[in-house]
Amino acid sequence: MTAQTAPDLDGTDRRLLAALREDARLPVSQLAAQLEIPRAQVYARLERLETEGVIGGYTVRLGEAFSRTRMRAHVMIKTLPRQGQAAEAGLAGIAEVSAIYAISGEYDIIAMVEASNSVEMNELLDRIGLLDGVERTTTSVILAAKLER
Image (tube, rainbow, N blue to C red; front, side, top):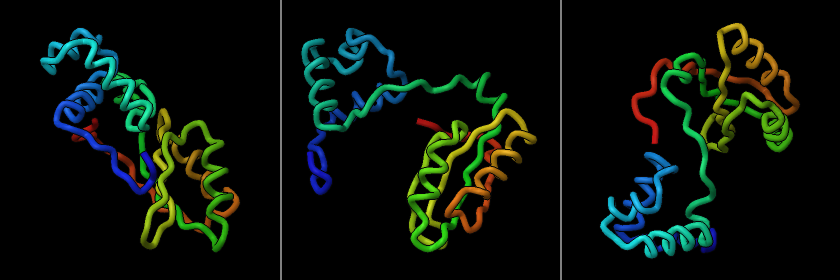
């Protein structure tokens, strides 16, 4: 699969991906039963989807009880001219940053961040604001997750 070519996913592939998004630890036998296909076909599809880069890895989704103890936010970041890479490198070095997205519009980057309380969040936002290449930030604290996949 190249950057210009979208993978050719059929309905079973899409259902398999949806099941894995719901619970990436489902046994192949359970996936096969849920999708009503043989286990060998599940293995083959998983291998193909991994090889084609559709599945880039498997990760942990935090439980609701733990997530409720965390404060999360989107930090929109405006970078100085030609300083985007410096800002991205600085963000990548901060453990509390879980994702970095390049965006279009007034801001250049959105960073997903997480802290255990408002004091830590404030300190984290100060560190981000002091990174090389950061001109200004705007933060939106996430109050409740309505849907996560």
